[in-house]
Amino acid sequence: MAFEGYATKDSVVLVYTGSGKGKTSAAVGLMARALGNSWSVAFIQFIKHWEVSEHHFIKEIQPIYGSKLYFFKGGKGFYNAGSLSAKDVTTEEHKIAAERTLEIALKCARSGKYDLVICDEINNAVNDGLISSADLKELITSRHPKTSLCLTGRNFKPELLELVDIATEMKKLKHHFDNHFLANKGIDY
Image (tube, rainbow, N blue to C red; front, top):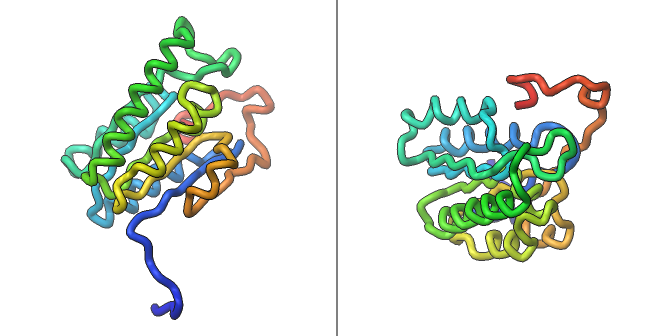
């Protein structure tokens, strides 16, 4: 199919943000699409430390994709989230974990080894002050020219919007958590 006057880009920056469910799910779908296209993918997770379903899924498919799929989870759990916050983890420990995870994300994004680097929940880490907006800007602007980047999590900083190519806001219309129902395994995590 030809689109006269349209061009393609060597890489793009995508953002999945908003208060609604589906940001990580969209990133996992993007990972599947990229792997299905024989791309190399790095999936780097900020915040989530506990075992969630995507961790099990990635561990199951890693042997199939070998060096084409790198996975790192670097968070210490929810930060500043009331009763859902990680227990017995100090602010300093959260910051150290986020900074270490950022270092890995920068290394992957700059290396040229990966066609796609997904930084799941990085927007939360920025919003919570665990890493800075300047850190996120550096990640976006210093990536390898052929490496696409996906950034997920609530509260993406509007001042960085001009640096991205695709931004999608997941808007919550209704969620059963608001009626005091916990998240469902396999659906919410």
